[in-house]
Length: 140
Image 1 (cartoon, one colour):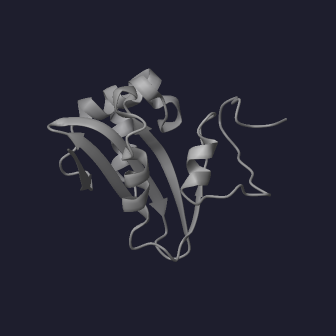
Image 2 (tube, helix red, strand yellow; image 1 turned 60 degrees about the vertical axis):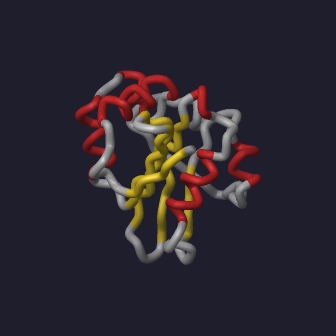
């Protein structure tokens, strides 16, 4: 049975680093296994949700928000061994609970667009981004 936790108090930081080392995300810090920066990003997030299979961290996601108008969901990652079991959907549901009045934005990783459509997200017609690095997610 998967247990969900809100906040950063109980995070297994090495487990989180390993999760993002496997699935990427956190602005490329996961593949670099940059634990200090991953920890900092999560600690200053508006809301963090983690998923646990017994004592093993198997999924996580976070929201950055002003708490009044806007929120952005980042770094929804689930270990490959635990994908397609509803964990990602539940993390999103918990992130959004109590924040239904916010305008929520997110950027899907390639191949996961249908997942977000299934849970109620729609494509944004005028989305733009500016990154400090070259990215396949940005058009020229």
